Image (cartoon, rainbow, N blue to C red):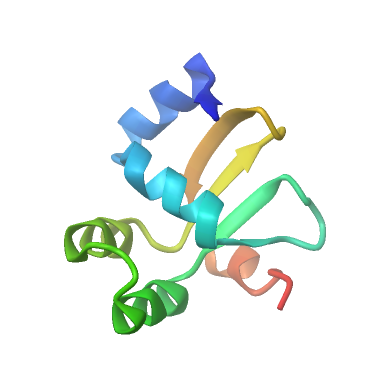
Length: 93
């Protein structure tokens, strides 16, 4: 999946590496209100650390960004941002 110019700019401004964005797309949950939004919470990052399915360096980067959300349209990453707690509670279980 490729990134829009907007997404690249926002990821750079917000210090969210592309590796973390890809992890969010692979492991994140979708929100009930917006199926194009993926969320990776701090708790989920901790679970990934325990499962040891990903390199420690990637999990460390994700931990610094979490909770983090990525919005995409199926073929293009539109934006990525750090999440407020109120959005974090809206994810689908």
